[in-house]
Amino acid sequence: MVSVTSSVRTVSRQAHRVAVGALFFLLGLCFATWASRIPSIQQRMGISEAGLGGVLLAIPLGQMLTLPLAGWLVAKHGSRRVILGSVVLYATALLGLGWAQNLFQLVPCLILFGVGGNLTNISVNTQAVGVERLYKHKPIMGSFHGLWSLAGFVGAAIGSFMIGHAVPPGWHFVGIALFILTGLVVSAGYTVRQDSGVDPDQPIFVRPDKELLGLGAIAFCALICEGAMFDWSGVYFKKVIQADKAWVGAGYTAFMSTMAAGRFGADWLAHRLGPKRVIQLCGLLTATGLSIAVVFPMLPTALLGFLLVGFGTSAVVPLVYSAAGRSTHMSAGMALAAVSTIGFFGFLLGPPIIGFVAGATSLRVSFAFIAFMGLCVSAVAGRVRV
Image (cartoon, rainbow, N blue to C red):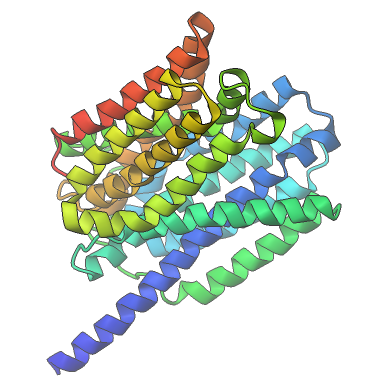
């Protein structure tokens, strides 16, 4: 009887892992699909550069609206129910973005897209924590986040193909949305049905304990680095490195490539060195890579530096989320929401801080500040139980 149960459990956890990994990929594909067609939608609606910056704030606005609710919904109803509903919302909002004809239609759809994005983020990471428990806490969170990053490349490639063949965003998004919903139907039956610590009476606002605040601080510093790299890599290569037009995007590509690759290797490394040491190593890699790019602002050295930054930022958030999901102070969903909320503000604040520092001093000095944030990741990790 015991051996049969053990066998079933082994098969079940593999199915859970594939299903949740598929959901991470689908969610990454959804976001990358929107991002790949932003220029097309901007051109069609005649939105200026400044106007586009204001319009894009609708996504974080939607995310912020659900920051206090996402964890509570997962704690009350379970991540399985929330992920099923939120993926449908995410895909539906994507359709709205593709068919919006003016700003009055686009902005509400962007807010819904942000709402769906945050709900899926908390619920799918709670699912990942549940699968990780089936593996006796063997680190596997990095591979899930690696699939999200991999989907970013796939979504960008599909977007380039659609643009090259003059396919309107609406029809492009219809195809992707149908693919996402089909994947959801296939995966839904293999998601984790019972989260750890689900409490129907869990209050919406729960004060995080010292450990969660420490994990949140690590996520905050790490996501300042990520947010800055996402938004400022191209600018740095253009204005500081003064790269040729064909190489302006090389820094961003180098960063994204090693970040995706690093996430697939993060689990193996964490299993051997321990999550704390890996996070500290990642912080040092981020600081080292950025320092190289700042001190030696030439194309080869800057590329090397950005490659190191990609490795440095790759494992921090997955390992922090994994640690938060094992909290004994509150349910996995609430703990993830707490840490994610703190980290989210780092992601939002990073790009404007870089702009402010660059305006007051120089872009090289602002990137030196990001290097300091990498050192903060290592320093805080040394004081927190991961």
